[in-house]
Image (cartoon, rainbow, N blue to C red; front, top):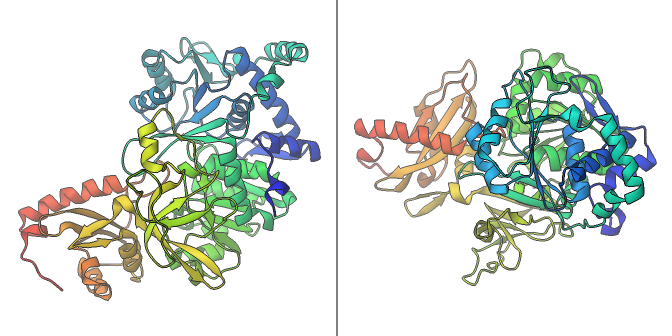
Length: 573
């Protein structure tokens, strides 16, 4: 398929296209209450919301921040911003007030949309913090429909008042004469900034990554080639349960579904039982989740009672998995796959080849689509700021991405952008990996994060490699490895190992098992984690390396007082 066959210039062009072909087809369905928005309704509502934004003085280049769950109105607001060139920035609903103020200060939005008092929390406290600390925010819009006295934050406007029928009809009539919306839309091109997603890495402070229409559309096509073109449009029913503050939700699942003309079924907040209920009720054909979410569903006692036979394809991403996990995936859906992705590429930039075995999939993170997003393995950048030398297959280096899938940079942070993107526009991902042939295709393999590489005894140890080996022990459920300062080895290898439920496991058993790998890769300490306790997680359900490292450092201090770790006599294997 050539670029000309699929590529329309702007994000809004795709739902508009499907509204013309099949106007009554559902574009969005809310699982909790069944609210449905057809493609025709979607486009009409986007235009009305866009007119209201223009009336508020919001236009091209202005930022709009949200703190909302995944509901149709949130999606419509996103596309309304895209229509007029405003840049929307969805924030995680679990952020504390101080974190929201911190992040808004980086992008200085003109409007802030937030929830009211909900069972999750009272978001009016967030609105109050923004009101008191963010003078650049001109509009506080509370997503409380028809609020009763006392329910609306003072100084905020209710969403139902903002979008009153009388106001919208008046704006629509005016637009018939002025053509204001079309004039605004005509100023938008594929390179216009559209979306800000704050990075959710496991180290460092979140950075506002800016994506254009083209960045997102290229990612949509990558994912479409990964799974979408194997499923007829009439049968594409995607369930989305990730937070809208993450590319996994908005650019990957939601926008790829609208790109392909399918139907997006949405959950406001992830819940394992609701997820399985939704698959059964709506006959979902495609599901995309973080590995942790799958494990939570599989662990439910009633998991086997749900009818999941409609599933055609399951996507996983966000962390490494073992063959046991892949085996469970194979039971859940006949087709499944993964790829490499990050906020700075609007999501996936590789995806696994179709119809490969579990054994072929293990360890790899997909194949590149050279005409969409070329991926190379390189040495570090040169002193002049250009990309380093490309390495041959089989040699480990930093994974780099090129082309129009690469984001526009971190908003107002040119120095931070320059650390990731070279002068010749090559994105250094921070991930280490290599290429090798698997069957008939060239696959990308992940060695680990550059920032998590453990430097010990003159060697570079990739935590993922150690984790994968320990995970082969039959008693192991989950494992994670971090590096902790070691007075003799520079860094020591510290392994957290969670046993399977109902199984007794000792550190000595894991130490014996680790004799199957090179001595310099063996952990200096193995901590058995309680089987009924989760590893600390980031807001997107990835293991929080930073928190785990803090826990490890506290344990190491205790070990030193006991004459262990780097206070113990050295014993070389």
